[in-house]
Length: 425
Ligand code: KE4
Image (cartoon, rainbow, N blue to C red; front, side):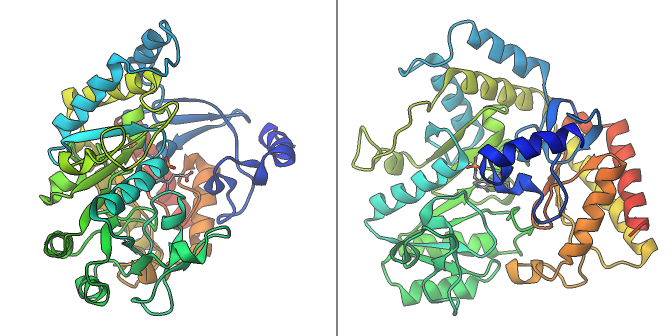
């Protein structure tokens, strides 16, 4: 048995499924997950002595590569003074000021400890501010695992949702309406069917938990217009895309101003973090100022804040986004060329340092069309890449990430490996 297999066998005895987050278990691609003992730059170093070019980047935070010296130094400096105080600390103020400066729609921001907390809190805040109960989300969008968001579409697009997990009460699901992405008419019909009842629409403006789907022209603008007309809050979940695609996220790229934004991942520099922010009149409804309760023992933790401040300052100084987009295009070009040569239908949606792989000829524009991708073929591609030294997200319905550390040899080598893996399918 390899060391990873031994570790996984031990893990299975004491951790459900052997993992602390389901996607890590390789259930959708098959095989046994490897354990990582260290990471640096674009590389992961496994318990089995393997070196892998990493296209997961710990699911987004490592935009500057793993183990960045400036982020490590910031954590070490903060650590000298202790790990947690349970009181306000200067780091909280500094990172809040940075977020407000980077994202114009965010006038006030509350830090928390995960993206799930951020979206759960944003939904409660939207309900408290509007005094309405219903929310709209889109099939295929993932916003973490809070009860109101683990909901799948009902029989008809306009019927209430159903729990997408055991343990979610049907009563909760009834307050969540699930609609198809890229369908402004479905949104209009939902507003007509639920007049003055919809507190908020929450979406990933670039859905990246179903592979990667880009909004069709006018879709995001239609959401802004309809939310404004109906007194409904527009909530951009930028946990993944915030600071990943531009300093101001997708809302900067698309010129759309949401009422609330949720953040996570990059703003913690690899340590546990989440945040939500937006209009001051809405945010001031939060305790201790207002009636919407939200709290967290480790919210604003000095180590996580120090790491996030270092990451945001590095992004501001280096402005890596044009370079990261070129890297993303390089990977997209290599994959499409390899698939053409093999005669395989392949779509590689790409934006900035994010890309996904759909083995289908059907244009992917929403959850239903994303499901036409051949997941079994993706599994073979995934293992073909892993065997050759590239680690892609272990699911056909995730998005891959590049970092600034991939520039040069790592991306060139990875493109060759992925080309070889497609040729061998
Ligand atoms: P966390 O609670 O995992 O910090 O964030 C939840 C979340 C919220 N919103 C968006 C847009 C997200 O992508 C996520 C989490 N992303 C997944 C990756 N698909 C995390 C990986 C995992 O679950 O292990």
